[in-house]
Amino acid sequence: MGYWATGPFHLPQLLDPRLKVVAFGEAHDPAGAMRSAGVLDVRRGLLGQAAYPVRFPAPGTVTPYREAARYEWPDPLPGCRYRAPAGAPVALLAGSDVTVSAAALKVNGQAVDACLLTAQTFQGTSPGDTQAGRGVLAAQGGAVLLPREPLPAGAHVQVSLRTSQGRQNWSFQVGGAEAD
Image (cartoon, rainbow, N blue to C red; front, side, top):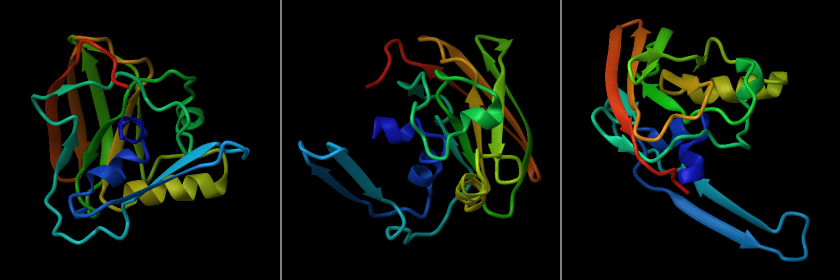
């Protein structure tokens, strides 16, 4: 779950406030080209009402995540002009009728580079990648901030996003040890 929670396009699907049921499957084939695979079905479990906004990491919490998943699809790094490792994603789900136009991220009071991924701005490495990434973000008015660098252990992080319905500001802490 930690891997999916640090993927900029997997995270919004895990946070979907309508998600009430998930299914997990895994397969192992020691002789195959892909030795193991895991699948988390988050689409058929969209059963509930949506309550927005959803912020991740939640305000006032301590997150164990410092670094973004290295093998996310679609790959957000080329569009951000970043190379791995990037910082763990920070997300806002504001509802499908809300857009996010600007964002700022501060770590220990200092502004840091962070790429804003939205349904309007994400550029994948192919038209299919762009469409997939934008579709995930558009489903709930999602915006993901991806810091250029991994978040430092013990840091205080302040988030500010300008949305079509006003500002969303919150802060959280980064735990002292990196998560698995």
